[in-house]
Length: 165
Image (tube, rainbow, N blue to C red; front, side):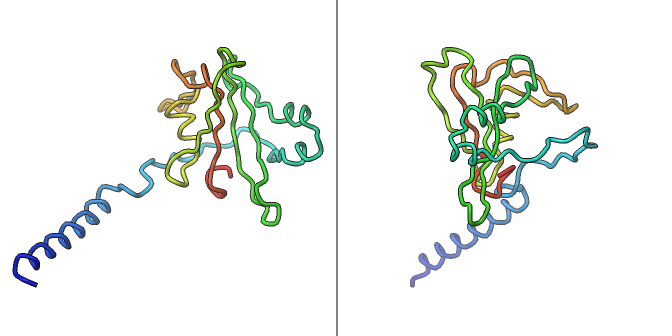
């Protein structure tokens, strides 16, 4: 190796190390969303709703009724529950479905898998494109513009072990 090649290698090594230092200082690549401490529990969400048995036994309407989420805000319909992906390991994936409000017969269907991987779809629902917004006082309100106005939105926590999955 000549002197120029050695210098180029040293610069590459220095740049790589410097990038790792900056990443560790700035927090990129880490969980960039600060944790919010939970307040006291004011009730219970009940037991998890596993919908696969309803599907397998053909009790679709019963499963649909069971998965209906009581409105968090007026006129926001939604459904949620768990679908089994591996019975042997009891692996289930959580979903939350918001039907399109406008022209549901012709509205497209969007399957939202939050990036990361390993980020919960709750982030997308409450901070990006869902019908709800949570303010600094932890109050839920309706977002002015949200995707489920014109599209069927299916949010899935994935992979198994992420969020509620």
